[in-house]
Structure formats: C-alpha cells, structure tokens
Image 1 (spheres, rainbow, N blue to C red):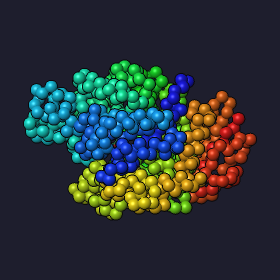
Image 2: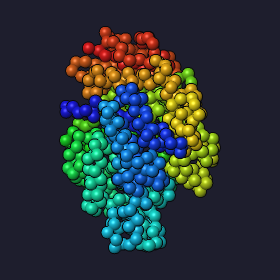
Image 3: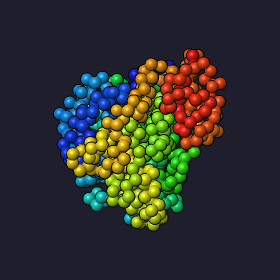
Image 4: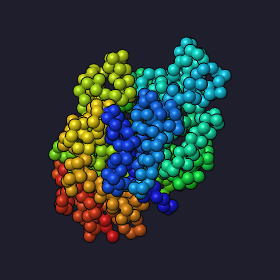
Amino acid sequence: MNKSWWQEAVVYQVYPRSFQDTNGDGIGDLQGIIKHLDYIKKLGVDVIWLNPIYSSPNDDNGYDISDYRNIMTEFGTMADFNQLLKTIHEHGLKLMMDLVVNHTSDENAWFVEAKRSVNNKYHDFYLWRDGKDGKAPNNWQSEFSGSAWQYVPSVNQYYLHLFTKKQADLNWDNSDVRHEIFDLMNWWCDKGIDGFRMDVINLISKDPAFPDDPNLKGEVHGSSMTMAANGPHVHEYLKEMYKEVLSKHDLITVGETPGASTADAIKYTGFNSHELEMVFQFEHMGVDISPTMGKWTDRPFKLVDLKRIMSRWQTELNGKAWNSLYWNNHDQPRVVSRFGNDAAEYRELSAKMLGNCLHMMQGTPYIYQGEEIGMTNVGFPKISDYHDVETLNAYKELVQDKHSVTDGQMMRYIHKHSRDNARTPMQWNDEPNAGFTAGEPWIDVNPNYDQINVANALADPNSVFYFYQKLNQLRKQYSIIVYGDYELIEPEDEQVYMYWRHLDGQKLLVVSNFTDQTLRRSIIQRRGTGHMLISNYQNDSGDQLRPYESRTYLIN
Ligand code: NOJ
C-alpha cells in the first residue's frame, strides 16, 4: 500500500464563527484561532480544517462566497490570514481550507454580471433555464426547502440553487468556470495552504436535461440533491482539477459527497484515481434519519445498522481507497448526544467510548471543535433562538406553511438534529459566554458551559481531552492503527461494537459497549496475552463490560 502523511494524520475542524472572538463583536475570528493554536497542538492533531473564511454575506454562514480571494470582514483581514497560516506552520501543523465551488453567493461579481443579460459573458457561468408554463423548469427542491429554482425578471429565466436562493449553482460545463476555479485554487496553494475540503463536490455536474425528480411525489419534505449527485462529467472535471491544481502541490484533499456509495467513493478516491484522497460519506449519518422527513424526526438509531455501514466502508475501501472517519462536523448534531449518552453520569464515558470506537478504524480521523471535551447538543426553547437557515426554513415549511407537524414536535426534532447543535460557541471556561466573547455572542452559548469547558478538561487528567490526546499519540506509535485491515466481530450484537484490526501478524481488538448496562462478552479469550492500549475505565474487568466501556488491546 502507498503510505502518505495524510493517512497518518488527524484533522481538527475549526468552525471559525464559533471558536473564539477577540474583538468583542460576538463573532469568532482568525485572531481567535491564532490564540488557541497551542491548545490545538496539545491535542496532538496534525491538520486544521477551517470552515469557509472568504468574503460572504453569510446567508449560509460562509458557504455563500462573494469573493474567493478575500477574507470575511467579521473574521479579519488578509494580513490576519497570513499571520494565521505562518503561525500554524510554526506549530508544525497544516492548514486545510474549505473550497465551496458548486455554487457562489448571488452577491459574487460573476453572478451580479450573470443576471444583467443573457448576452453577458458571465451569464453562462450559472445554470439558467426557461420556465415551464409560468412555473419553475422542473420539480427540484432545494436542500433548504422550497423550489431549487429562482426567477430573475431581468433575463426572464430561472437559475438553479440546490441550497438557498442566495447560493447560485455554477455551470461546470463552461470551461471558463473551471479555469477560474482552478486559478483561485492555485492562488491559495501558492500562498502555502496544505489542502482542501471540497463542499458538495459530487454535485458539480448536472444532467443538462434537468429531468423531474421522481422521488418527490407525496413528500412533505424533500431535497433533490440526489438528482445532481455523481453527474455525467464529475470524474472528468475532477481529473482536470487534479491535473491543473492538485498534482502540482502536496495536499490533503477530502470531498464532501452526499449520497455516495462505496463504489462511488472508489471512483473518486481510488489510489490511482487522480481525483481526490478521501470523501466524506453520509451513510452512517443516515441511521437516525427518516426516508420521508429527512432529519426532522426523532427516530432512534440501531447499533447494528451503524456497524453494518461502518464495516462496509471499512472492508470495501480496504486496499483500494482511504476512509475519512468522522462522527461530527458543523452540520451534524453532537455525537455524544446522538450515539452516546449526554446525561451527567455517562457523558464523559460515552464520549471516550465513541472516540476509541472510531479512531481505531482504518482511515483519517476528523475531530470537530468541542468533540474533544464532550460538548453536547443544545435545547434552545424557541425557534427564534435558532440561526441556521436550514432549521428556520424547515420550521417555516413544516409548521407554518404545511402544518404537517406541530411546534412541539418540530422543536423536539430540532433539538435532536439542528445544525445549530454543533454551532454554539466553543466552551473555553466558566466565565460569561464560556470565554468565547466579551460581547453578545451571535448565537447563545450552551448553558452547560459552567461544567463542560476546556479549562475543566485541561485540569482533569481523566478528561475526554486527554483521552483524545492519547488516541492521537497511539496513532503515531502503532502503524496497525493507521494501516491495519478491519474485521467486524458479531455483526448482530445490538449492544456491543467489537472489531479486529490485522497487520503483519499483529492484531488489535477494539470493544465498545454502546449501552448503560453492564454486559458480558467473550473478551479474555479473544485478547489472549494481548495488552490494553487504552480504556475509558481505570482497570480491565475482563469479560465484564461496564456502561459505555471501551477498550483497545494490542495482540502481538
Ligand atoms: C455542505 C456544508 O457543510 C453545509 O454547511 C452547507 O450548508 C452546504 N454544503 C451548502 O454549501
């Protein structure tokens, strides 16, 4: 197998808006990231992925870029960026930028020109179609509710927006668009950045016939992302990107690919694909999602489903492509509240259990800010406490327009799945606003910050933080953690997730109790003379697994 630094690395994701404010405007900024680089370094990670920091009107918190070569005013200046990059490198860390090129803001200069006239050079930078019988060109629904098409009177046409109407989809079939994008990517690479996380990159190539979405009939809430996923020219365009940009620099790349199967992932990231290095797949994020209501549900998840999906990705990519490993990001609820147990008694135990269960798999682990201290979901009482455009639009659609769910139901679903669960400010200490800002935070702090915060975590040798630090250290020590093959044990066990890793005659045994029960499983016999590398309890209780207990053994 080829061995690459990014396979051995651990990535730490920073959501700059909610990380650290240094100028009192209530919004996190680049100086705030600089302030905490020692903290990030101490965790033992290698790469920092920043959510978009480019100029943006923030209709979708930076995923609507108005100028790809400038820094968002709220976050600072290009001088701050240069200082950040330099300081990151001085810490021996690398920087991965978010690249959002499926769409731009409607305030981007390209779009401002595009909507002036059909004859404007930039018109064809976007996806325009005539209406049908006075209505949108087809039935596609935006990921964030409502039609995916917006009418513009000045050109008497509709443009496609798979996300909000301020996020207009680019026309990748136009080679000028592709060259503009490759230019801006090279421009950032020349500044010395170390990689890209590519937003919804498998949506860039659409079928120009724009057929109706057959899956939408009778749905109360739908999205047409699948209609745009893995389109006709996507591999051709990514290979071109590889040739024009990626092959010229030593980068870490990961493409966000909703709806991608393992077979798709092998096409995008196969070791000889000349496209990407990793994808963010979503199948495991679908275990508690409803086929008709999407995330607006309180469906519980089943461990056997999670194991089946994770294991399929582990075995089918093995030797062919490389997994990304994640439980969390800025779009997902907090994992300790989702697959663990955030009650005071079990929060730290289950947060560590989830860390061990994931980080011992084959792939590159991603840690989302706050995961390393076991931050939890938030349950704001009112819809007006929320800021996320997806949450607000879904509430309006389902509660106010269609009356398909009550306010009470919807708030329950929001508490489980809203993206704002991940976006409340980083909890640094028990001072006002968790030490995030001296001003009014743009979104309220989770009230549990007086207990759950970095200062407490750093002061407690048994904290989730030091457990994650140890996971990162072990990864550097044992190449079996990085490169070993994976084998699931007892797929039908509904309570325990147990698997092997194998490399050159060595084995790892990873055992995780996903329940608050004390259970018995055959562990002593399996581990034999192996020794325990890490555990979230103080001692080894053999075949007895205490609530949320998790251990890894190395067997030589
Ligand atoms: C995926 C990003 O992670 C999400 O935050 C964003 O809303 C959409 N792509 C649209 O850019």
